[in-house]
Structure formats: structure tokens, C-alpha cells
Length: 109
Length: 122
Image (cartoon, rainbow over all chains, first blue to last red; front, side, top):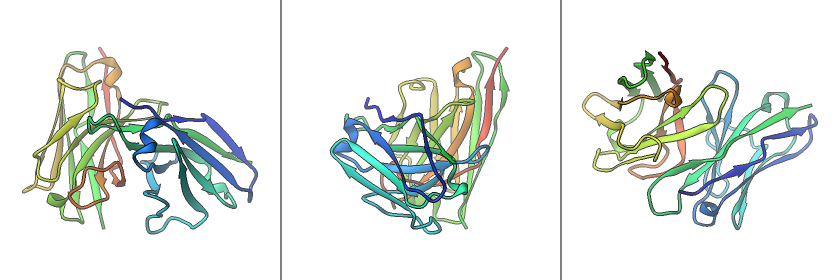
């Protein structure tokens, strides 16, 4: 099955812009979804499809994709954005699996 | 509002069995595929299994294939995960998650339950 690779940790200064990336062969066939998870809480969907935000997700969150890389961008990061971020997608091997990236710990300085 | 409430977690010995449930409300359960996702302590998310909206197709991660069975009862708005031959490495918080798209197999999970902890230990 496919794999998705994320940087383990990223930091950003308060109010600045940060990009979190996700790489994998499946992203050539499927869009990534992005999830935010805070300690002790369930994940929350923040971006899906080409660049769609569920209701209630601030517009500072955006998504993009190119080749085998998907990106989640937070423009003007806030303290409350400090969390773990996971990407996922369908597996492109034809086995109907779902794959998750290993997660990126975002620290807002 | 959409609610997913897992139950059935607990401590079980290696080789034992456990059945998890996920009670759904606030949406037409019978129209959406459902997933189980787990998270070992301090680790990332791992997809476990998927079931189509009508139960006609089921898919499993290699790590649980042959040991776990996903099922659903649309008359009770409930999703299940039967876990047999449990191993220490199955220790995790188990989440049920709803697919965003109507009657689709998708990796877009728009609602998650709060999770239930399964600990496999002697």
C-alpha cells in the first residue's frame, strides 16, 4: 500500500504563515484531506478536496496540491492553531485502503 | 447535530476479543460509509477498516485483516468493530468516523467520535 510522508515538527511565529506538506504517490491520483488534532481530542477535518473548508473552519486554512505533494497553509497562524496535523488520502494501489501521514506537530511561537 | 459515540473499550488479555460500538445520530446513517481509525498512545492515526453505507463492501488494513470484522446495523444506527486475537500492538484509542460524501468510499472524514480506549495487556 501507499505511504504519506510528513515532517514531524514545524514551528511558526504568531501571525506568520506556515505550510505543512504531505508527500506520497497516492496524491497523484487523489486529493489529500487535512485534520487538526489537539491533545486529548478527536481529529477535526480542516481541508478536503482541491481546497475546501468545512463549515466553521477559519479561512486562514487553505490547501493546495502539485504532483505528489499536498500542502496545508495557515496564513496568520494563531495560538489556537498549535496542534498535530495529519493528511490522508485514498490508497492508489487499487485496494480501497485509506492512508494517513505520520503527522506534523505545529508549534506557534 | 451529528453525533458519534463509541463504546465497548476496555482492558483485554492478549488473544482475547472485544466488540466496539459506535452509535450515530443527527444524520441518515444508512446513506454514508463509515470508518474505524485508531491511534496508539503517543502515535499517529492509523486507518483500520471501512464499510459501505449498505454494508455490501468492507475493507481492512493489512494489520487487522483476518482478525477484525466491521459491520453495521442501519436499523439501529450503529457501527461495530469485532476484534479477535488481540495483540499488544492493537492497544489504541479507536475512533469511528463518518464519510463526508453520500454513498461514497472516501477518505474525507467529516465527523469523528470521541474515541474508546482498548488496552491489550496481561
